[in-house]
Length: 398
Image (cartoon, rainbow, N blue to C red; front, side, top):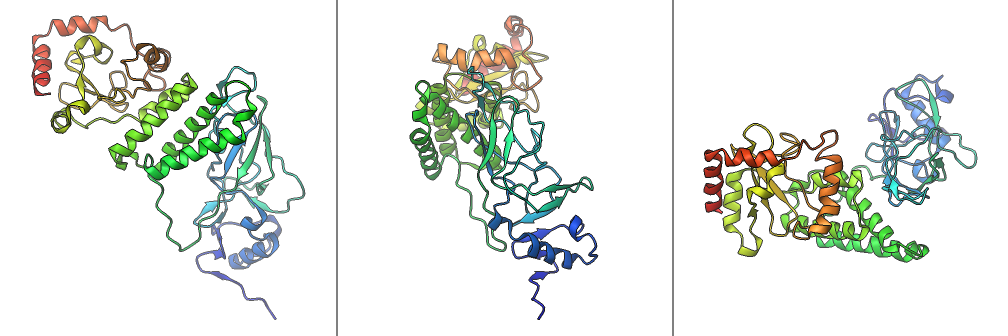
């Protein structure tokens, strides 16, 4: 008796999903897509059962301080769950499939991790599952959870957690809101578990290694969260304060961490909104309009003498507004924009180490270094009576 085929017109078999143009070398003689799909399932089995590795699985490096998630370029032909790609041994491109693990400890100097991976993933045992890559006629072995990737800098990369495929037709759970009590509990559990299982291995610098893990986790969570602008301000402030405490423990800022600050900064969208918002705040929570002498790094260019810089009461957030009252950001003015602070400027030494020194080296955004020294900006302001009147007018409204 012929076995009943469990597939449908949507190109699915159980928790498999296939592109219409998918085919396998071993099954290439079959023209019927449904037959090819069915025989693939019979021959290769279920990726979840055989520990094939889908997009989003967690990676670690033997020399890296942080975790990373496996990415996918446009090469996937076999999917599981809600269209989650199953990856192949050739999916090892840095920046597309494999990303930085934060800090590299290969040479003992705690430099930024920049993986170099010239060869495909290596696997233990026999693997008969092959997937046709969409960008060519090339077939590649499906990636299994026992695979190892060798970084020529000195580390060994492996899969430590296979992403569980989402079940079809079952609504996905709402993600835990960043900064919420549930998220903060999860983050603390993560740090405690790492301290208990790995931190004891470091005779010196254990707290810094734990902080590095926490920093990488929060960066990954923010980068993959979606629209963080919808997160309530109190949750966001809780997350930022915890993140800053980890940066303080870590004791330094590398390039990726420096530019990450642009994803943390929050300020009212217009100068009018800033004024209205500030009037409603309690005195101890009000934003501060800084004196011109503390704003000159944000007053470059035409009409720059009109720019006004505000800092939140806790010193974390900055807002810089131009003559028309627009908030300056990396999109409209990467030179004069306000930036997030890892340390309150009131703590001059730590602020210089964690905020000023990285700015001097890397600027506000990649590829845009800070301009010449800003002392001429003071002269422009002092020579412009209208700019002075503008400053005094806003100061009186605050």
